[in-house]
Length: 124
Image (cartoon, rainbow, N blue to C red; front, side, top):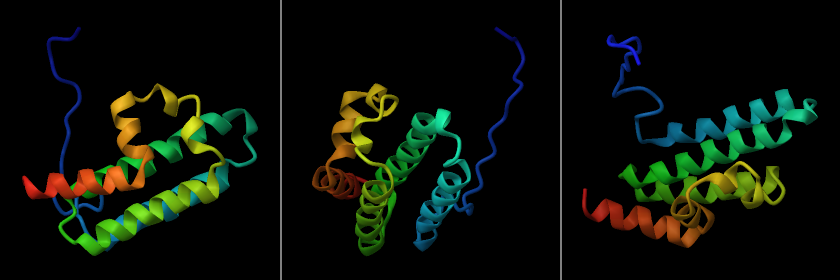
C-alpha cells in the first residue's frame, strides 16, 4: 500500500480507442500483426491467442456505445469472422475460459451480443 498516487490515467476523447467510428476496424489489423509476429513462439500460443480473443471480444462489446448501427453490426460480424478464421476453437482457450461466465455468455453468441448492444443503446 502506498499513500501517494504513482499512476495517472489520461483519457483523450479523440483517441482511436475512445472514438466510435470506422477506425475501430484498425484493431483487427493490429491484432493480425501481433499474431504474425509471435506465431513462431509456440510456448506463448495460448497467451497470444488469449490476447487476441480478449481484445477482439472487448472491442465487439464496446460497440454498445457505437451510434452508427451499420458500423456496429459490421464490426461485430468482422470480429467473429476474424476469431473464427484465425484461432481454432477460440471459445475454449484456457485463459478465456477464466473470464466471467456472464461476459463469455454475451461475447460467445453473436445474436446475444448484438441484442445487448441494441438494448444498451436504447438507454443511453
